[in-house]
Amino acid sequence: MPNGENKNWVRLCGAIDGFRVRYNQWPTRVRLGLVYFEDIKSLFNLHAFNKLQDKLQFVIDDAHIVAEDNAGQSYDYSIEGFPKLKPPIRARDWLGIKPDYD
Figure 1 (cartoon, rainbow, N blue to C red):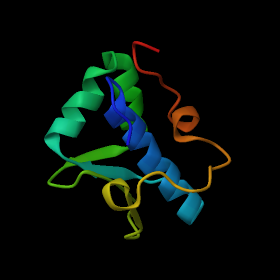
Figure 2: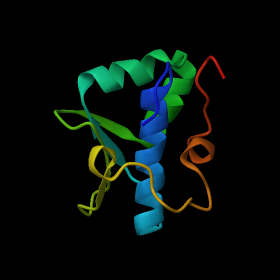
Figure 3: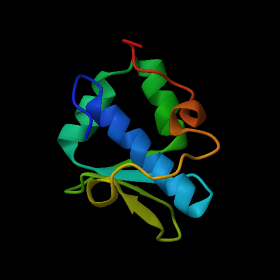
């Protein structure tokens, strides 16, 4: 499990990568707790965070970090952790943004 300033960003990318590996497509939304959401949001300037929201809808609930699509497919990072395989395009590259400290 990652620790440090960007830990929830790394977890978010892990959930997205896991979804991509499993279903060969990108998720449309991520369910996550408010603390996770606020932590991830704090890593980006407004322009970058808006770009992130152009690709993913964030749904605040009791989930840790769950990547989903409209067909009911999901990948729960809190249960499954990082995927064993790497997707051909990593979530960080697909999202096209980096935290402000990178």
